[in-house]
Amino acid sequence: MNDNLQEYENPIEYDKENDVHTADIPLIASWAKKVTGPIIDLACGTGRVTIPLAQAGHQMVGIDIHAGMLARAREKAAHANVDIPFYEQHCTALQLEGMEQSALVYMVGNSFQHFLTNEAQDALLAGVSRLLKEGGLFIFDTRFPSAEELLEEEHEAYWRSYEDEQGQVIDVFTSATYDPVSQVQKNVTVRRRKKDNTVVNQSKIDLRYVYPQEMLRLFSAHQFKVVASYQDWQGHPLREDAQDMVYVVQKETGM
Image (cartoon, rainbow, N blue to C red; front, side, top):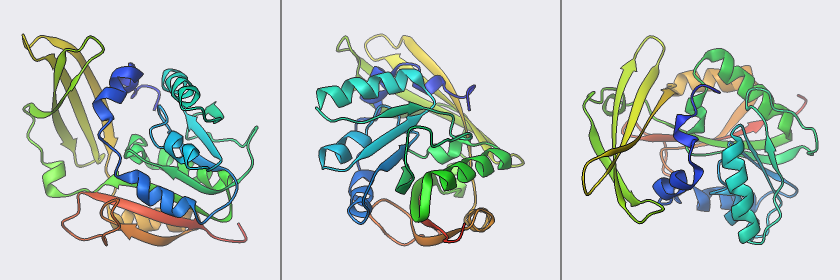
């Protein structure tokens, strides 16, 4: 994952570009109310979800690999007047040093797709299991491997616009190519200044797609059972026309 982090090199601009994403917070919050003790936000980034949950009174812990994103998260947490410990750890080598096991770990923003190989996915779930108490829950999302998603054309498509730190409007365009053998999609994001179409930033990110039946085998291999599966953060049942998959899985007891 270390060589797949170009999207996160400017945490302030990242926040501006992704500030519209809040749909996951209510569902995570509803599950958070059912547990006690620390809740771990895995691949927490700049604390987009961590901080609102801390403001709601939950004991939060954030973990991410990116030092710059964590620095931004600490600044935002201090500004919000919430005390959240943030740890810099690789999600394929998760350790409990300084932390106690949790009844709830979650990972949002489709971060699961950063784990590009079977070995990386195995290492992630083994680490999540170490973080969880017996019977603890892991909630995460990943994009559904629909034909529409995988067969995107390679030409640039407009995604959205935002204002940068100087107040200039930035238009964001994306393009993608998919390798069906590795199940990895190579994505390019280009950001252009609207007034003169000048490219101000370009980044690349590779994302792995996993099919629902593959996911079930993966859960079984790591002794997780599915509590719920949705096609969105509103809790609608997973169907063939889904764009996303949201899973709530439980660490089996006796592990």
